[in-house]
Image (cartoon, rainbow, N blue to C red; front, side):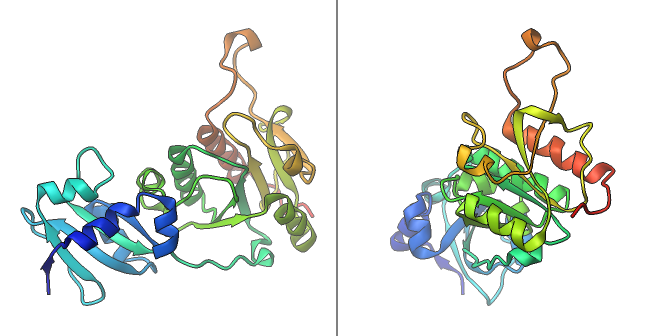
Length: 260
């Protein structure tokens, strides 16, 4: 049965724009009909769907509650300037991280990344290059922030995100997998000349400060993306998500057999 969205439900959904309330309710919001369609096809569990009553909702199910609202109500609960007309409220999954499962796989990690748009784009990069897990330091942006979800274009449904004590994780990763760990720096071996294995962990740092000393201590190799122009003729650094795409591409391009 489809009901009108109540004030209580509207207040709950609006509160999910704040991390504290997402954590308390174990819920987050994805916007747009495409997000709803992809979520239905995924393993994620939908709690509610809200749509504008001026539009026809082409999808319904007995597995979740469906509510309608008007333009004013939709604007109150949407995080976008132009409300798309359909919101999906999804349960936050509980992922278990077994480091041994990362053996023979390429894995990306981020050290205190702050910008939600960058994190969402990096999820898309992982999705595109078949990287199943994204490891985040505990102080990184929240993956269920509405801006991350929107920027990921549905990649959050296919890439598992784990928040960890990153130095401790890297130490255990090396012990359990025997695989090489790489970090992106403004100096080191050129990514275009490095001998890259099929399976490894590569770490990208904070937008302003790069990789912390606590993390870099556990990394085996320093790699960087050399600029085309002379030093005085180029930007100080690349956007972190652009760098992630270049590095992931190089790992996938002509990988060597696993180096262990």
